[in-house]
Image 1: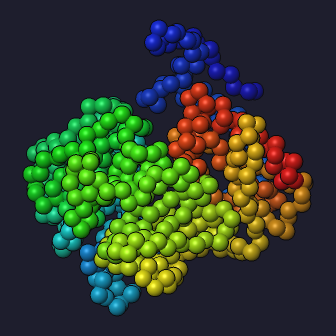
Image 2: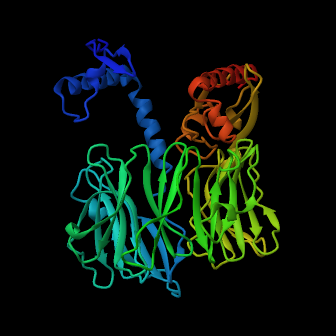
Image 3: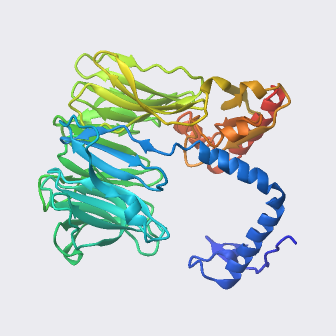
Length: 520
């Protein structure tokens, strides 16, 4: 029998307006109310009964998905501060093993194990490694671990020379932590005990009890989130404060163990900015002159002194940048697709990085060493598994460092397309789709259409190995990049929110109708 939830009226009054929620009783932040758990059990049991006739198919699809996961995976190593780092998944292991070796080593089979997450998780029902960070002198490792499945991490420390663990444990923290340059001081973000929002920055000295930690900054506005990172120059620890439409950056001198934070530019409504620092200059991504962000450079905090490097453009969103000694690389989005451009910092020569697929996504990968001409970037499409490239920006030579292995996959069997559909108000909406060429019959295939369109998030046309089980059964899979997302810039997001939210749903419905008419 279909479960039926009880209707218990609950009045909610906000701004003088009262509405009745008959199912408010199902909210249980403690996850322990018997009546709520009982109802969820009924729903789960009903779902199992309804799907029981398809159990054989479920088992077959699950096996297909598992068989596409290689038994062993090794990441592409990267070099940072004199060491080469990688992670490895061994056959039968659920978690990664993190390793390093000297960057000068030629013995590729000899690695020092920093952390075996399988051992850390061995005696727990749940385990997640939020991240790890090693001191500038390469001797101490900090790591954030969650054993509760509530994204409340504990920070622990290990001496990499002796292998011993330090006694202190920092509880209820976010996976945001940065070492100061003395290799003894760690800045970390603590979460609010009730809301779990990251709201405080604390300073810890290695080898001392957490009770002696110092509060560096507390965000009083609960619409702002707190995060930490270090600038490319390693001179500053950045406290980034961001709400949905406004941001502010505080800086700490990474050379001082007792540094006090100062605001680079005080927050003002609807101004968003982020920054990096390298070669004695600050580089800022800001929307002060346009919704799609521009790039600026300055030596001082005075906003009037900002030099404009890339102006805001109406149809191109500036999404990010990476600094090198001789090159500046920018990540942009235009007509629903991402792109990368390298800019020579001396000559201002601009070189675009070309891609082949009609629908794809590319991104700046981890590039920790700026004193190089080699750029690492990622690439994926609906027919190309995630691929890590290394490009020599001086010569243009490019090589594949790693491509995700998908056993049994042949990219030549699949076709991807990038279309534009006209919505009912005349706006062109992009659609990315993929299908198996052998099984495509115009107008006869089942069509699965995905759409999101919220928070300015972009749903990119990337690769999915589990999706192959649909394509191999004749499905056409389409992504409608509806308004409310960020695929076509900030205005695309704003045209699908608040009083314009209806556009999100109309875009999706109109695209579905158009795809059927086109024979998909």
